[in-house]
Image (cartoon, rainbow, N blue to C red; front, side):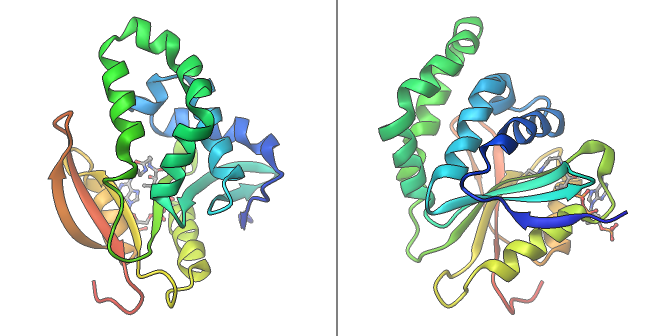
Length: 206
Ligand SMILES: CC(C)(COP(=O)(O)OP(=O)(O)OC[C@H]1O[C@@H](n2cnc3c(N)ncnc32)[C@H](O)[C@@H]1OP(=O)(O)O)[C@@H](O)C(=O)NCCC(=O)NCCS
């Protein structure tokens, strides 16, 4: 079966709905999913509209079976979320914040992330990757990774960076290592989540 990997145009906002639904299926118990599909829609629309960010999709028979959301300037992406979309996000997450009051603090912390993601050198953040659970293990995730590796100008950007859970997430950690990422550090978030930060450097050994 033919799968086609391509970059979404900034104008292809009609894809945001299926991307958000795919996120919901691939990350059923994750915080962002709990904030609701309208929150996800707003977030992925921002990735699409932001001039330094984007979305790469894996498409099969006109259906999205996987995607990557990335940013060439993650600190500024976060800043733009606060500056231009704070009210929109607040409205989207209102219901979830009422049901789970602890979410409010966590959302605010997430929005303040712009400073903590500043690094010495320009880099590309692989903010989110997922493949439809029904299509896992067919190589689509690796194809998406290969596409972003080929797209990035490593003369301008030092590496591709990403964060993933260090615990109860063995398959995903193996997936990144198999795709040439190297562990940079392990840290614990304010919520007590142990995370691994990975980097892909062209020509780096793994
Ligand atoms: C992680 C994810 C993107 C991988 O996509 P995929 O298309 O299934 O991955 P691939 O088929 O390209 O797999 C490549 C390698 O990763 C590993 N891997 C991927 N999924 C695996 C699984 N479910 N079990 C074991 N190993 C797995 C294997 O080592 C595989 O190599 P192999 O084919 O030689 O065995 C996908 O499983 C997913 O969307 N998971 C849920 C969302 C998520 O956790 N995303 C990462 C957030 S940081």
